[in-house]
Length: 169
Image (spheres, rainbow, N blue to C red):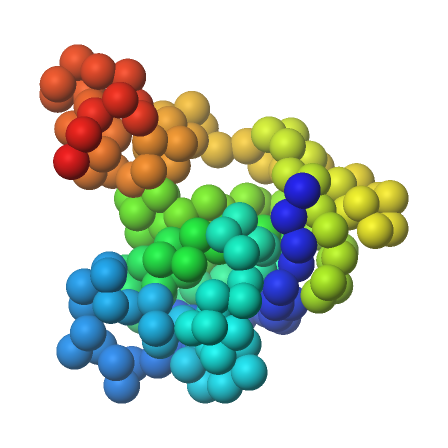
């Protein structure tokens, strides 16, 4: 079960997720402090660690549009948030997969802040309303990258001949 901690509409750009004025900060260990920096209340909750890992951001269509900055995905990954959206901008979506950010394509999602979701491989169930929404599954290779924690970890485990999750470092 995961709680919806932020609900957004359509066309949420990478500049909303990670404002361009912070582009000098690119280390994944430093980017999370700027997640949704222009939303002072939500950013403050993130910084104060009031939002548990696995919490969900719900959005409409075209989440992550705009520039191709991967910091938009790394800032969310740094807080271990999941994103359930009706669909994603292509470059943001690939950056998310490469970084191991949990992204769920759910074209019919209906959820509000504070509601609880159960996310399964084939559907998202809004436990608060009792409604169920089908998920567009990722191709197996892309899902394997996310499950491994990102492209670097996935590749490292493949090169070393280990199963994802067993590689160190």
